[in-house]
Image (cartoon, rainbow, N blue to C red; front, side, top):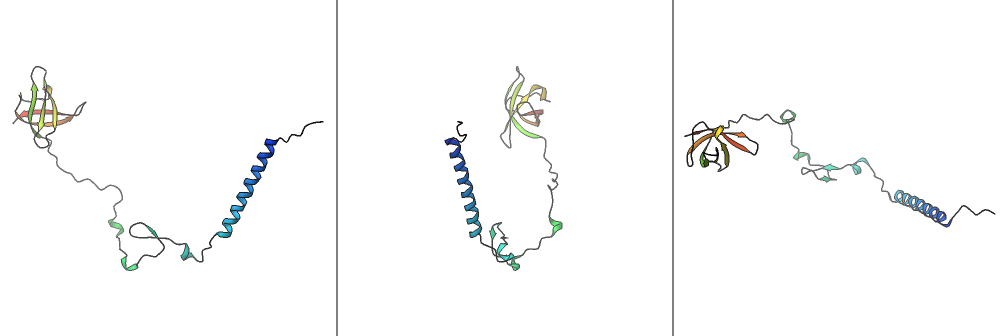
Length: 149
């Protein structure tokens, strides 16, 4: 005689599945029974106050602000042309003639810039007051077109 194909483990899984289905059905019926029905459309509406928070009271019509649709700019406003003087003033902090490089401290910002002998117009030495322009280099901003003031 053949054994039954139903094992203990299969029976337990089937019981758990049925129990889960019953619990789900009970929860569904409970939600339906406890669901609060809205009486009207007014009960379902939500308003937003001037701070952006949700509220159930309508806003005061006397506080209403009229906005002109033409005054709203969509996108980024055009940048005004601001003239930035490309010539900076500074003082030579260090310069090595034999190696051909040095550093200049800008007088306004006290920023230190690298200068190479190829970027010089006049010969410079330590302590000279100079005018220069800036150029993006491999490791930061470099002083170019350096001339003694």
